[in-house]
Length: 279
Image (cartoon, rainbow, N blue to C red; front, side, top):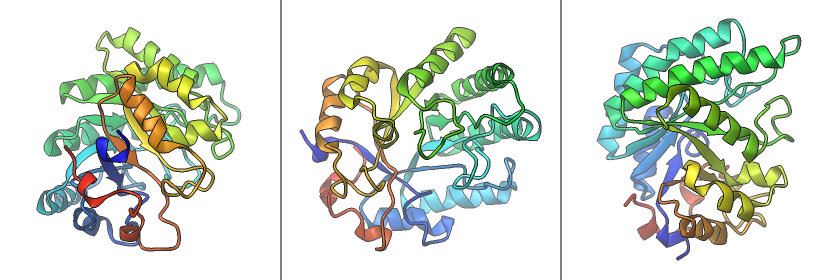
């Protein structure tokens, strides 16, 4: 048990960001990782030129890294936005334009998990209208993911850092997962369990694991406080990951933490290099 018994991947949208996007897969590989994940890399557009998609695929292939998780277009992330799919008007349209692009890219690199961030509440918009729009768009995303053999992830964030995001607890995200699965009949919508976000909400992490491990499609970690590497805060991450495994979770654990003041390559000293490659 413990960290060496887990399957880790490294998030290239929060780690190795001192490097250009196309250099990050090789840097992750040099640090010992063979599996990586990404937020949508083109925050300005849901539909980048095919040449840019091809270049990212080549960078992943050349490094020998496997993309295991990808966000759909989510607006300005990092930045003020927390997704686009529930935001009426142009942002919802951009999300829809992105669905087939993201799913197609995922298929081209063998990525089987697509994360759809819900989006913030918008001043002046009826929350019921936003939720209805969200369900429409999540159904489209779930169907596209299913066509390429992928699961759809629905993530809970934390209220202190995302005060306008409505899914700020595990039960709220699970409720959306259930609504999407009921609407599609596919069963491929799952929970993205981020231990950092849930801890920031003050949730009982062991209880969340017991309740929802069977419906969890992906896990992400960072320590709290600070959103740094394991060991920089007070979360018992090694024990919590063991609890997840004991509860039946067999998927990967995404490293989605800030490296601090040092280069990203030096932010993994808590994890033996032999435990970094995907298994």
